[in-house]
Image 1: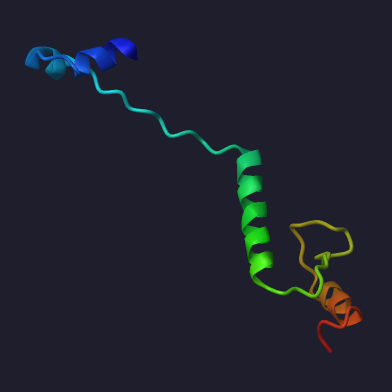
Image 2 (image 1 turned 45 degrees about the horizontal axis):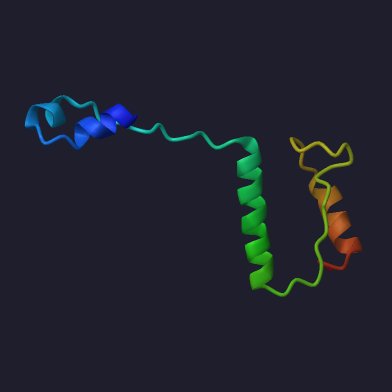
Length: 84
């Protein structure tokens, strides 16, 4: 990198012309970085509002994210007084 930088700053047009350009590859975002960004966005939203509470709703009795049981979700929301 130092050599390339020196060549790019050379007074010689030939040297500046043949100097390869350095291109940085964009870094892939890690799972941890994505999680951190997600939490940061959630905290920004929460700080911008006045939430009364936060509760988790299980989508089904098996607690599997791939299955959605409307009656199970509705029951939880009714028991918490969120819907009537």
